[in-house]
Image 1 (tube, one colour):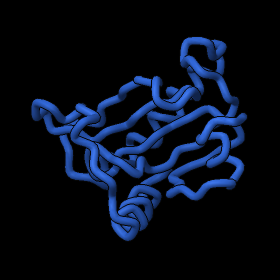
Image 2 (cartoon, rainbow, N blue to C red):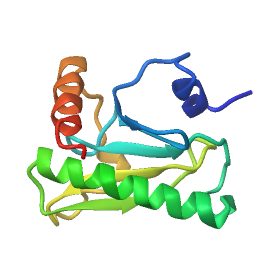
Image 3 (cartoon, one colour):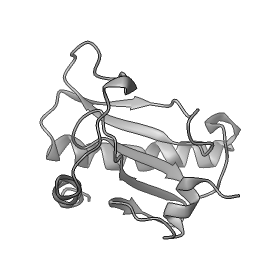
Image 4 (cartoon, rainbow, N blue to C red):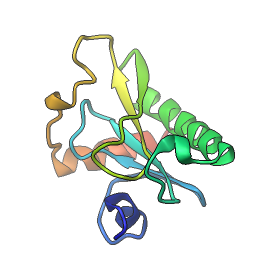
Length: 131
């Protein structure tokens, strides 16, 4: 069975897409740690990020950089944290999380379901900064 992320890529499940190309896909986390929390995934379904070949892994990071630069312009923060956790969904993915240096910012126990309209608005704002 395909992962929930593959189902999102295939448009079997909805998402708030930020950016897509032929190899990678990014969308807002529905249970964000902070507004603008975005997931970036390869379109190829690989469980563990370090099982990606070098070209796919470096491409994922370069794609993530482009998305992170847009998030940083759209959301008030000091930096964009890059986190790879990858145990809940068995599809390699990168979390891009706006952070300010506050203890506990990257604790998933603090994640809260975002309102639909808030996700629509922040997605529009981030996409406006994609270059």
